[in-house]
Image 1: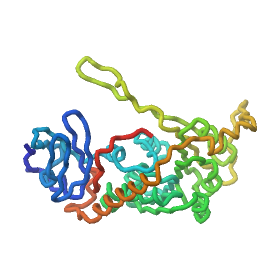
Image 2: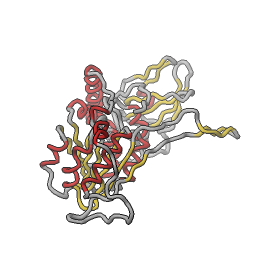
Image 3: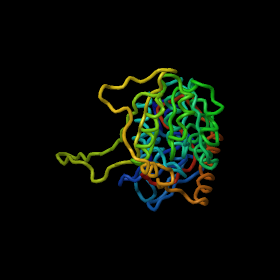
Image 4: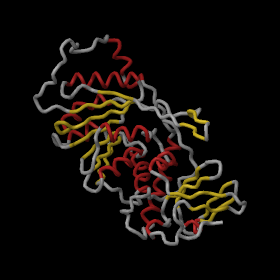
Length: 356
């Protein structure tokens, strides 16, 4: 049985065609898809009409013809990121929230991200930067750009909050046309971020933050030393975030058997004023010791990187573009300013969350 229609609930809180919804079955399995008039959700435990969902408030429970109950909610941004199509490894939500904190992202800034990937970080940045902010996203691959654009426009129903400037090409080439001190923050999600530090630091405002997202210890070591060698930033800092959920049921309280472990390292630093020199702590070595042969371990070729097949990328492009088209076609009945939910469109399928 369906939950009664939203009596006494604000119309803006009711589910609409064109929105992404998330169904959860009694075993906790999730199914994420776009609501479409006349559409139908199918599973091995029965089906549900999309029309039966449209007009309900979140938190409603509906039953299939096999009497299996499903809870319907709009997906949180974290839920959406983990279920959306992705051609490149995403920045995991636990890392994205740390990036927003460490880089001190706030409304109205101009932020550049390099390595657009599947658009996971772009989704978080748009939400924080808001209408007064500007997000410049750079990726060298046009197919990844199309997947990311589709994912972001689906979630925001065709209208991402911040001004969005997407550029395809090499980061150094893009930054060459960027005026000095014109960016507030730079986030580098790249295989070899140290190759782009010179141009990045030139375009950052004094006191701006540069943050690099790298997967391996050798990459972390290289980019930290490269930042130090520039002598144009504060002492770099680094961290990783581990996420361990807990099982709590009565007195049975223990860590879950599975956890989200290492996904990547974050390292960050702030730019100095032109001509300024960072004070050196007494007794500290000016430059750490490492051998010439150590450089070989720091080359991009020495770092393994998983890639999707060309056929898979084309499939993801078609999927993300089709979802974004549906989002643009579905005119919201109510203003998009409703910030209580992740609004989006398109069929996301039942893809499980993957670890980077």
